[in-house]
Image: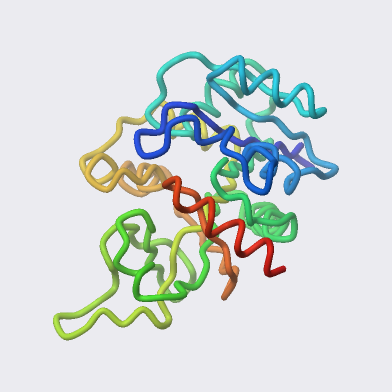
Length: 244
């Protein structure tokens, strides 16, 4: 049985929201909220690029790995951290993005279960799109997949759609919980970013664009997940939490 590691990449220099990991949501830093949701029997690390985040994690009882190198994506940052650990190539890495404060452990466990069931595939979670605003937003990554739940394409554009309307019903957005083996992660980080990944700025496309492996979809269905891309998203998250 492979060991399972949950890793949360977080960096301070987001162009749309500088210092995003330490933005407070109901008086608790966002990176800590994500770590809280991932706390479990699995190995858990924050993968960060700032001593501020290392100290914050440590003060709250969490482990972190500092990667100062400039990385194209959070997955590339995780790959550098994994190289510092003595892991087997079949060990499973669960990448939970540090700007998903509304995820929960049951969602992560669904990705883990699917990865164990499909060891030769990368796993990516999706959720239902809840509004036309989400469907047309460039911040929301839309996912289309085959009848056997293999990812076909991901885009910041509203896909699938036709010439007549932008109907959002029955469409899906990426939920940034990925599952891959150390072996698949090494293939990812040693492969070049292709024109599709660069154009869309969506890292999961590297697996497809370089024919590394299939990406299998875990459908989380309808929920109120909301990623933090801009400062105004903080209030939205707080409203959702307060309604709960």
